[in-house]
Image (tube, rainbow, N blue to C red; front, top):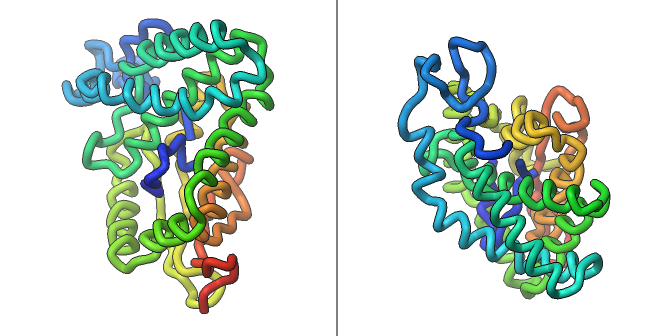
Length: 273
């Protein structure tokens, strides 16, 4: 589930519809039997699923501006200052076109909403950079390198303390509840997750994601090639916050699930018994 880092998150594994979309992705349309925005044929469309992200667009644009500052040093490898300013404006415009189509997965009540919002910002970056000739590898390295550099700008002792909050009993209890809620499959664009109790030795707790909102979103938007780079962010966060993540398979790699297992590490990088 969402790690809720204090650093501006891009995703937890992370990402990201088309021009002037009047569609809410992953909302099931009963008339056409496809994922769409909710035309008049959709019997289940709720007003909140259409307006949620539009209503908070100003806040989303502030988050996007922060992300753009994080990515700017990496982008400077390819563009001069004038070009960079134009890239920033183009990315903002692309994101604004995406806002209305971000999948509604429960709004403020969903712990994964932030991940979907950040995914849309990453999709805007991806699309603009691809238009300017960047390869998928280059875009992926812009994202991962920028996030890693930003996180490592914080003292290691502080990152270790922050990571500890993801191992409290309160946090684990919340994640059990979040996983149970996801299994209701109320929103087609959401994750479906199962909490895994720790064995007391190999790992402290974990998740099995059998459906991933980011994989769905990226795939339907023709950007599945960037997913492996977004998945790698989970390990960047884990290393920075001493969370000891291990993972043997992912949905992005056509596996049956994403099997996250966390083992708290000491500040020296060793596991805590």
